[in-house]
Image: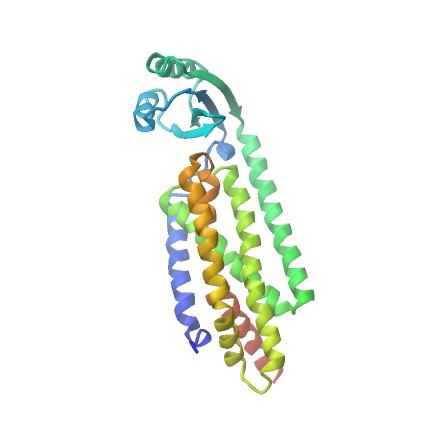
Length: 287
């Protein structure tokens, strides 16, 4: 039986290194907030035919330095989505005319402007939603299991969020509203995987009376390991397939891929060892 708990320092060190690099990068670069948070203009053009995204991107970058483009398929049509924090209405017209000159069938479907105040409100509401979800999970796990299980699970969730944010700031992936939805999804997925391990630990505490806490935890993780790995692999197959075949939802699937991998890691190597540390600390305090 593999000694998961005895190697806790290794698992924690790996996570701390990634998070530390992410925090440094966050301080230097910051997160690359998209127009959903910073405010800006969203332009949707129905191209009505296949087009070279790189070629079109070079064409329209004459009108703003911060333009981001996305190619999407909808209703048997090919669409171009353009996002910018600084483009003017006059330049939108020029941009569309240039695209239209090469792709005669193109039509301007929508042009929306998002104010910075809306982005600030979105960040505020997203934070509140995450806090409420976390508190609700802590209460549920504390009642259903015990408070130490709940605290360990929340620490694992914070770990997953920090790992995802670290990857985003390092790679400067744009952060928009789909990212928030993905983060809340990650919280639910990760806690589900963690509870499976905790439930087995609780069962084994009754079955393995007389065994020390390390043995019980190692045995419980080993018994649920195959289930955790199989679940994450099948989930990743689906998300990666959607990411490749449906480019329009990549802002949602990319954080999901990072979060699912991090969630599996934290359920096995962070949550349970953290619970063991909390349990041992309490025993020492009561002696």
